[in-house]
Length: 238
Image 1 (cartoon, rainbow, N blue to C red):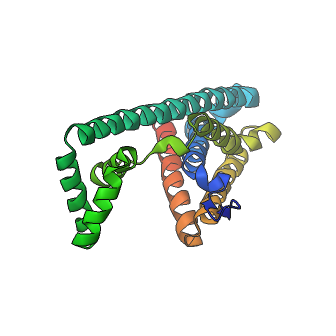
Image 2 (cartoon, helix red, strand yellow):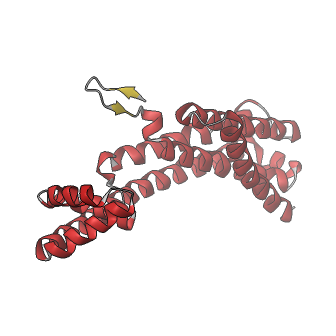
């Protein structure tokens, strides 16, 4: 978080797009590891038979396809969220214009419920009634729990999701670029996978300033659980 020169605090890129980075990165790591774990779980001899090239082809194809789907899905999700917010905001502004007395009363009650003194709530309500858009946004935020997503870019959301999926999702494949697909290579892939999850947890810690053990522990635990499930599925088809 930094000052933008006007006295206002502004999030840095990691903080602003932390959700997309963690979501895309975690899914990329686990999804790609699932390909590797599927071969390993089915037996090292099976992976050796199809060869390194085949493992990499499956992994890279899955990585690119899923990263594209995730990025476009995040883009559409953000656009849809903005559309829903705009529609709700317009309905709220229309309700305020059509029935200002009810709007004024609802706003006053809301302010008082949030701890504002009755006299101050009345004054604030009168002021906000003269600014219907601000009032409408306030009401849908505190009554419905819907925040304005206009400060975020749907395109950037999609790009950060795609990029984090590709960058972190490629880590479990790295040993297979260098070695033959046997048990030792799989063990290196496991270590690389948990190192990538730990790195993602450290990124969370850096962006949020929450306790390091919590950020790293949660990320490794969630991702590790998914990785174990992937390996277990491979074992089922051994």
